[in-house]
Length: 392
Image (cartoon, rainbow, N blue to C red; front, side, top):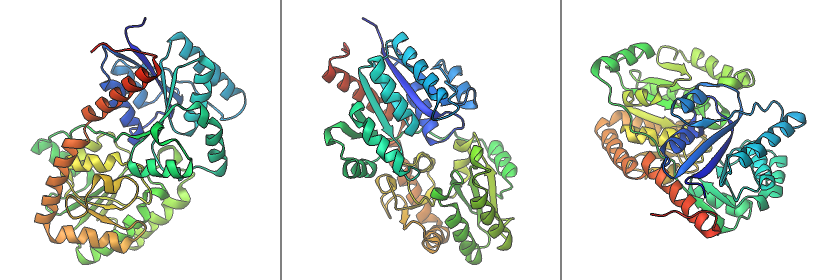
């Protein structure tokens, strides 16, 4: 019998340091090496900064270079997946996102892997009718589903009719933010074009419609009209989606220009030092129209930011309105602006909310807590299926 449980993680794309990618890195690097052997299989790309980061941490990574969803490329990838599973005698296959859910569940069944777990991260806002139909077809091949919020779990139970005893909520966890020296703080502010003496409102997001950048920019114009000394910074970009997203991004940039906000609203593009930027913010804002459970939000909580977030998805499970943050309706720039002005006009209240948010994040949303939750689930499922036995 093997001395470690082998868990194969399949993910559609492993490129930038987005929420799912960072979650996966934290999970596989945090698993008890005496008991678990993680293997990460990205369908795309062949090489990336995140793949390099995982390999540098000693994690086995096998990129599969999927070129097309259909045709020979998919068949080749499926064959390689089956070979990998058999060669490493995989005990659990855990998948992230649609293509990985489909290929992972099919190939795990063909390879005879004992347990298939799907990790659902969002509410399917980008999935078409075909995707939902395919999910129904593969449902019998999936043994268990992990959701990142109770809100998402409730949706899946209602819309996909999953058995309640086969769906569980496991929250994300994030690392503590680094403590910046005075010199490092000043260097970061200078790099971003921000002033130490003016309040900083920051957001971290991919520039996609679902993340609500349009509403944040509109809210910024309202805030600056009443509070011109405020500074806004949006961390993140469209990455590989930039050509396809031009029709969305260009009007936003034009609005910023027409509203004469170019000196007060800064776009940083994609960054790898988000954890070092969050402590610079006085206020963190999350304008999303939909969320599973936002890593950026709980990172901001750990940084002690005063927070204004939309009341969507798992956000109300992280934030308690008026206790450790403010929740506002989605798609409402005026409501977003009112929340931001409330904190700008009462810095002591904003600081109080931020401190309470930090305490909650440190007690509930740490990487250690998340890893322990996953290890416990793996042990319990393996014991119930009699595919593995741990000696404690």
